[in-house]
Image 1 (cartoon, helix red, strand yellow):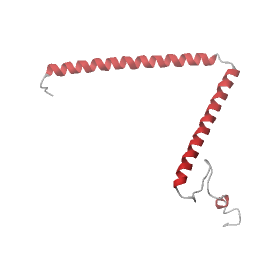
Image 2 (cartoon, rainbow, N blue to C red):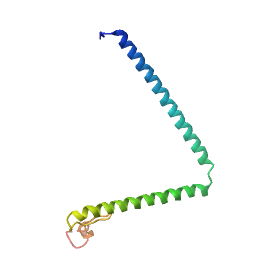
Image 3 (cartoon, rainbow, N blue to C red):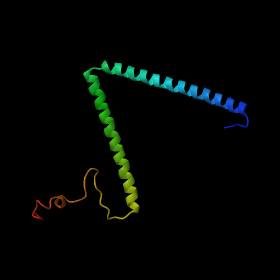
Image 4 (cartoon, helix red, strand yellow):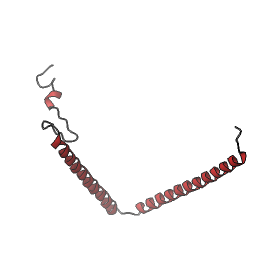
Amino acid sequence: MVADNPVAELKDLKQKAAELRKEKQELNRALRNAQRRNKRLKEKAKQLSDADLLSVMLTRRDKKARLDELAGAQAAAASAAAGAAGPADVEVVAPGTSSERPQEHMQGEAGGRP
């Protein structure tokens, strides 16, 4: 490739190389800091007592429960708002359950087909 201005192209390439070197240094610094932070956290975790660990686990469980409850309330509010404008014959089913009746799944057992 023959450039119109090889001096300008060379200057641009050198500038780009310098920028890439600087970016690489910043990424390496961030990686080193993250590794050091991880090491410090692991050392602190090793020093926690069983009671401290249990406390942390319970706190996390409670926080997750509150977040799940909040998400459920927001979903209910959103569905109630959407339901006000939608049809009235929509069946509401709790998450993790099926709207089908159990008898439909047990046709062979309950006197249906053999």
